[in-house]
Length: 389
Image (cartoon, rainbow, N blue to C red; front, side, top):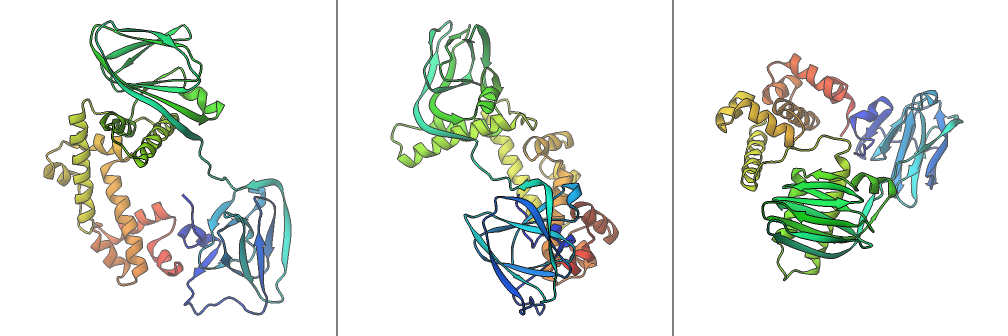
């Protein structure tokens, strides 16, 4: 996620002011500079505080306290920003071009310090793109069905809904079971056959633009589908013949989402699948009810035991539900949500820190302050003092 200069992480480098603050930038030495940098090989360092604001486009402020560490922080310029003296800084345009206004006293000395390496903003580009949805079929085959094989120049997705399917690709045989998928790369010869039971499966053929490194990740493997991928594939199964161009585009997006989900499984544990669609529906509805209850009662004491009793679920099942779908324990989810709410209350300046701790149901102000500092790197009091809305 991008950070703004108005985030608490920026406070180690300076401060942010709203346009209504009395601490206006110096007006005696202003400059407007056009930013076109995509990479940085030098940084600025001033002997006084520097005030900046974005006057056009979107600009990232890149800052560090020591070039030798090669540790940089990047913030989108938001509001009037003061950069503390001694901080090393420069700018990168996130839009095609951008402009920044700098203000500082006339006697300010600004040094240019060259960096031995190169800092480059990590731009975000799509790693895959479905150029065309060519065809899709839902197949129901009886026992011992055999398809002798084919290859073509497009990507083919085979998802087994029920039953089992054997497929031989490049002299290796794979078994694709219910809630599993296999993807055939262009020009891969493959056959398919069923076993003792009838099998239903979905075939989707697309023109897919994907890099070679990611092509290898999704080829010649059988994937267990996670919860998200199963839901988007159900879109194809439910679709009838009378669909609009918008619906076709939604189907293309579902394939792209499936591929991205499969690639992301390389870096995080896959979600545990429910055994049946009915169980999946039950878990979805139960989780939504629990999360809604937590949000509606966030200003009250909330305990895992109370959730278990209210929703008639065991502690271990509740833990599994949250870890599989929210990627955190229920206690940690509640605590993080309360801490995020506390930031909002602090910025409203209506309550003392003690009152906020009480409102959010923390057992004591000391426990609240300790948890706040663990999560945000500063005490609630420091946050209230330094953060200017």
